[in-house]
Image (cartoon, rainbow, N blue to C red; front, side, top):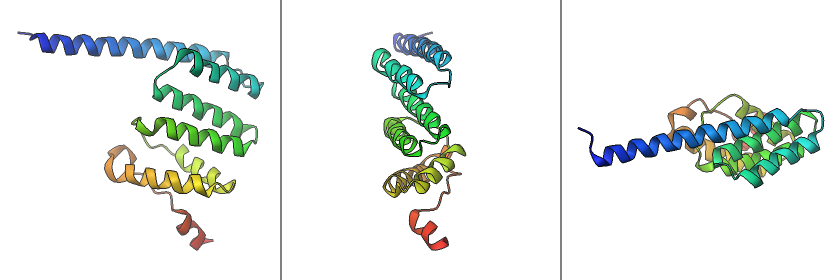
Length: 150
């Protein structure tokens, strides 16, 4: 027998999944408009999406990572570092998996002299590595360790 409580939970889960699919479709539509030819226009499209659609923090963080990648690709490394920081800040409460790109982000922070961001996120990600299985592979050295190696 299905209890009222179980049915309510199932209905809530179904609504969350439905909302998630709608949000994903909306985000994919915006990404199709991003052509990669005009960074300023593409960034504006993505920021407008955040402002107008008010997506969940996971999608907002993803948009900021996308913007950071675009800036990195055109050589605007300071801007890229700034948007990676905003993405991490926005995604602070979002569970996400470690991936090798995170190592590249730390390398960018170091390269552009943003040791403040490097330290801030290194500490955060080391804590994630201690408490979350999905971050066990994170082993980026601290600033102090890097400086000793050089």
